[in-house]
Image: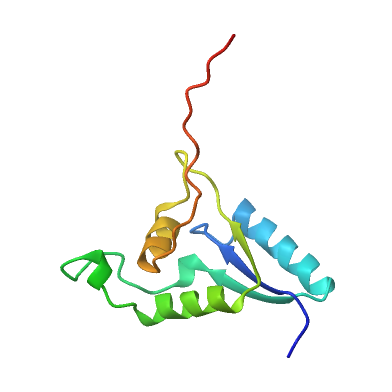
Length: 117
């Protein structure tokens, strides 16, 4: 059994050649140099149907790519998500993947009415 920290790096930008991709690459290099057991999941490379084809999303079978992503999350001790915020949330492919996998990710920005005194 390995005592190394198991980290899953999830890139949620639709392009790997973006600033987010460069940040993910830099994190990966530093983590590996520190001796972390690192795996990477680039959501833009996952092949799955983003549409619900079952009668309900709860009845939708997990496709192989989503099943593999779920297994990676279960494997990890630590998760690192890298994605841009577009219109106040993550890009659509990232949201679709997280919903397909059944993840409840708290990445929506808080909307508060702030009173100024």
